[in-house]
Length: 209
Image: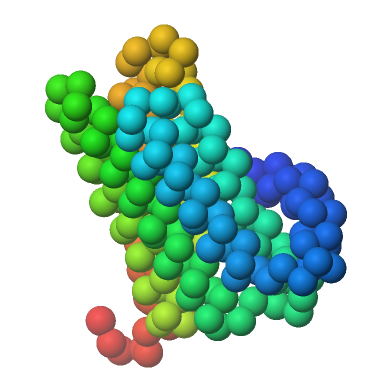
């Protein structure tokens, strides 16, 4: 199924990231260290800037450090593949970062009395967690689940663009972005559940419902 940002765009980003990944590996930096540093950067951008209403700075910092998700993966591949703990750490830190981003957005909107925006941020937080959980659970059962129109990168970019536009004076942009993100996240959950259901049906022994 098609994603918002196609494979070709991701491949182009990988070519940009690869020289940085090689340099960090030569310097002795591990993929796990990059994972943790990226999460800390996202926390600073979200909680230190976004939650205080500095939306442009917060969005730019979060976007910059969110790109380490691509960097640590490239480093792991270059160094012989991700370890079990590395994969676990990466997934766990992603959840921490996402919670900080949407929690900060919800907090800032609450201080402005924007109840609709707060509701949208909470839906995004819940739906984003479900998107990741469905994939992890499916893969834990031996099935693939790399489908859906909005993965983590797309979700962060959508809320980031909304934050920047609101920060420069386009007031409704963040709320619109949040409701858009809520919709595409729910669609992604449905796509993944449908994909897993079809696989489960094919794997089901004959004669069993």
